[in-house]
Amino acid sequence: MVTCADCKAPLTDSVSRRWGRGPTCRSSLHSAPEPGRFTAEQDALPGADEP
Image (cartoon, rainbow, N blue to C red; front, side):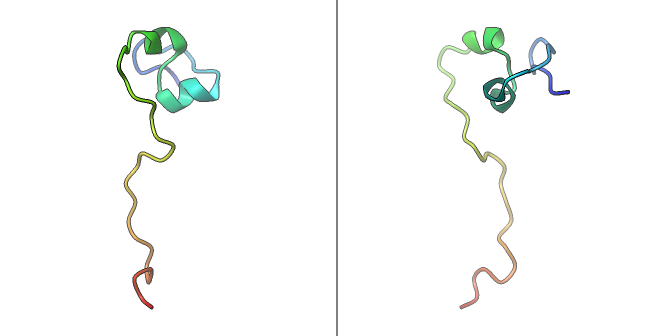
C-alpha cells in the first residue's frame, strides 16, 4: 500500500501516488511544481554509445 509522505493516509489515485501526497497535503504546497514522469536518474545502457 502506498501512503502519503506527510499524513500516512493511503493514496488511492494515480495523481496522488505520483506526487507521494494526497489532495489535502498537496494543497498546502503552494508553489510546488508538477513532478516529472521519470524523476529517477538512470545509468546509460551498455553499448549505447557505440556506433
